[in-house]
Length: 142
Image (cartoon, rainbow, N blue to C red; front, side, top):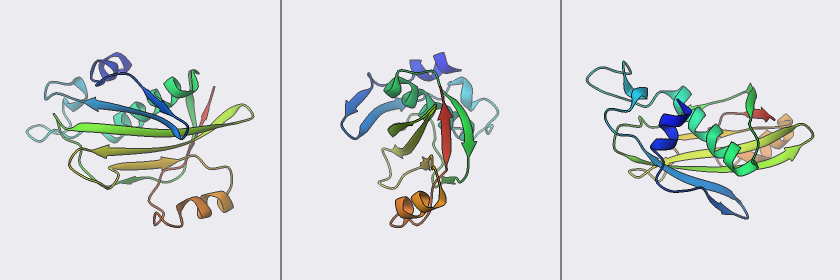
């Protein structure tokens, strides 16, 4: 599935001081839409998370795996032929990375998916006080 996701990327990873950003666009015949849902394809949540993980891996230069996932907010159905911008910020914490990710569609200024890894509840509360708590917590390990 990672190869199919990479094939749908619109250019290379863009890196800034704040993190990384990459855009994707999935055609109607993308394998991830098969069966989800017939006649009304929507990008499955697990593939949205995999897309964000791939960007985090490219940003860190490490192969990563999920260690934890604490909260999720999927606020938009991501449909075929819509550009999706994935923004990731990662910081190294011992043997794992704490990452924050937001997915935006070209149709919406609000995130279609927001997740963040958190070390403790104090950090989580301060990080999301202005975002209304719409996030997924995830910790990724090398």
